[in-house]
Length: 93
Image 1 (cartoon, helix red, strand yellow):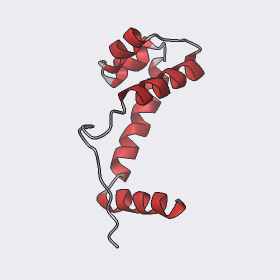
Image 2 (tube, rainbow, N blue to C red):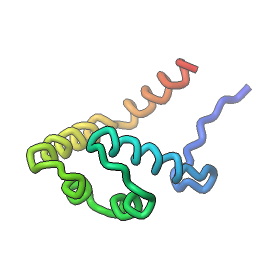
Image 3 (cartoon, one colour):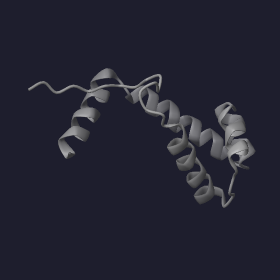
């Protein structure tokens, strides 16, 4: 039996837009207390990272920390680590 992993990079197989927006809406509510409508979410997702967080009233120091964490995470995502993460997720199932 063959086991395969399919990556839907361009999201043509599964429409995950709405679940992603609902997750973002919940995260923003938990972080800021603000409840955003769909139009506000669409506007936010079109912003660059710094503009996104500024629009949610994060200060410069917080944004700097977020950017640093994002850069560190990018640096850690080598193909080997990504493969290891996928394997670990599959083992949990």
